[in-house]
Image (cartoon, rainbow, N blue to C red; front, side, top):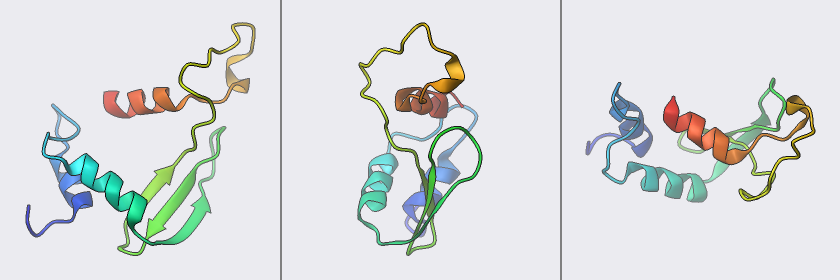
Length: 98
């Protein structure tokens, strides 16, 4: 893995059995996303919520979707589903299940 970027290590580690191996690549990616210079941001089209595509100076991209509510806030049971803001923890769960 010495000649690969953290982004490449993450992508090449995806298999039918796991999203990533336990070798710290996610921590490294999060550090890079928090510290690399951002060169461009644009809003992603479609869907019901705000999503931003962030481009870094190394050419990599990330999708940012802000957390709208704290995890412990309960949804009103009498509302129509599509009028509610999506929960970030369900987005994270869907990412891992996928």
